[in-house]
Image (cartoon, rainbow, N blue to C red):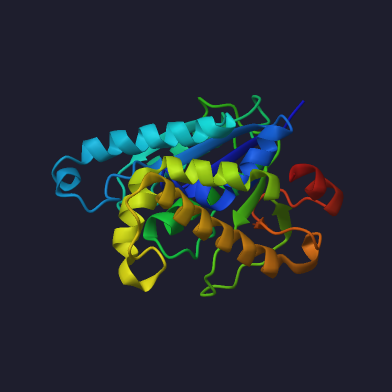
Length: 272
């Protein structure tokens, strides 16, 4: 029987960006993968149309997320909080508790939860991580959300890699060679056209290589592939001896102390 894995990010495109290659490899070996976005992405664009009618962007981003998940046969759910307005509240914590408890067999839930660290640059990212961590122990408490069966064990929580050092630098505990999945990761990212082809180039402007982003579909995907491969190569360099010398593209993760902490053998069984 395969594992149950949840990738939970603040926005509809976060999971694919940071853990898409690993998610593809998990699906390859028969694991169940579910992408969860906590917010609806309603503010992630510059167009006046979407500022006036945010529900149109919400609908577009939901459709993009479904297409991205379909690339690897993953599930997708959005908890529906307003983009840019996520807060750690009792109600939101309970929503996360239920989402995690129900993402696997009753009483067991997921084996692995992939997420961002609570030191990320975006307020939604930070609060998303905080919500997951606040929910972690409560997953095993029957009186919390009694309508969803409490878990008899804690899953492993693993942070995906980031570049931030305030509050402590990322520590690569495990790294995954995503060479055989890099094109599918790019396909998933490309499914989020509103973000990678529109909002991110606009938002980051002339400060990064997305400036002068091309309009032609093939050139756009080529530029996105260039950026995705460069990011994966950076992770590979940082992971060092965790990966074989021949590895070129990688994703890395840090194990959280707030969930089950696996021994080396268990860690090897969790990650592809």
